[in-house]
Amino acid sequence: MALLDRDRTPARFTVVTSVASGLIVAGTVALARSGLLTSSVPLWSLAVAAALVAISLVLLRKVGRGRGRARQVFVVVPAFEQKYWLAGLVRRLHGRLDRDGVDMVLKLPACDYDASAQTHLLNRVQDRRTAYMGGIVVATAVDQQRATLTEFCAASGLPVVFTDIEPFEHEDEYPANAVYVGYRSAQLGDLAGTWLVEHLRQRGLTRPHVLIIASREHAARQEQCRKVLQSAIPDVSITELPDCSFQRSRAHDAVRAQIRRLDARELRLDAVFCTNDEMALGAVDAIASTPSTATRDTAVIGIDGIAEAKALIDKGTSPLRATVVQDADRLAETTVLMLEAMHSGKKVAKRTYFQGQLHPAG
Image 1 (cartoon, rainbow, N blue to C red):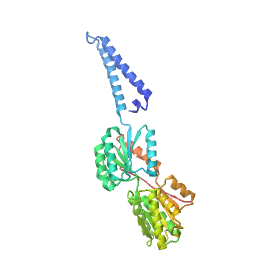
Image 2 (image 1 turned 45 degrees about the horizontal axis):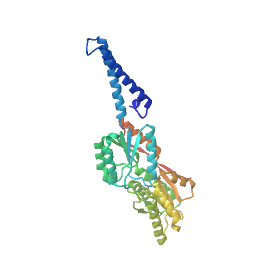
Image 3 (image 1 turned 30 degrees about the vertical axis):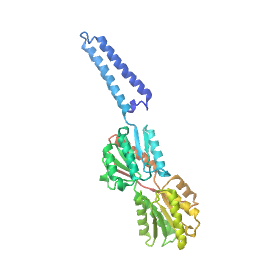
Image 4 (image 1 turned 90 degrees about the horizontal axis):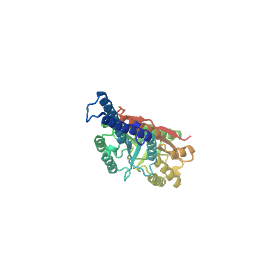
């Protein structure tokens, strides 16, 4: 009960507990003076004394509940090392929870995007579930983890909001105490593909070569982008590089190697799509550090809308021409509101989707 919270309202807590203690003393004195144990007493005296004691006990019981209620939320993320999108989301979640007087307990994996590492974190939360009012989970390796996530929700009994990565394919697969708030990966990939089609058509390219830097965590992004390109430009040539784990350095190395292969075959690279902005920045680094005729007019597009990417796009001096923005502020706000509503016993939607927005140059 916020009105009797020792940490949030210390002055009120002191006053109420003092009053409650005073009422107990007053009740005790009244009983003693009434001579209850030694003689007959008027009924009204007993009634007053009993009322004083009853009121004091009710107040102390409410104080006890306020002191023992969980005011912590756990946040489990699948990665953190050089993951600026996730770091920004975590910061916003912390700020939003802190405004409500709720402490955030951040759980970081020993190894990025590792199913067993996330299972370990969920087990740790389960061991201390009574300390939490609920939690927020960014899942990883969802094809492997669905059963684990379902079991965790059932065993903990806590409200759980999944975000960023949708863990279940169908709404009826969600446990009763779990929901999803975030973006559809396919919609983000569709926006990227649509922008690429328009860009390539404006350049008059009928047989363009596009490089896709893929990711395991958001496979629908590259799949939908590829479908859009192939549907609109049947003769498009697409090379898809394997998962670069959302790492700028790995994307840099992969793109640099691809440029050298194209140079050897005297081919050009018309566009690069990366499934997050960190990898898009790595692609830009590779193009800048590997002089080649193959990348003379290469355009790069990413997803997330992190500050560095948007600033570089707005500057207009690099191959990075666009990003698909996920609004981290809106995502954090809605995620916390949903968790608080579930904690209060309110019925909420199983899935809440946002629409990504394109941030192009110019």
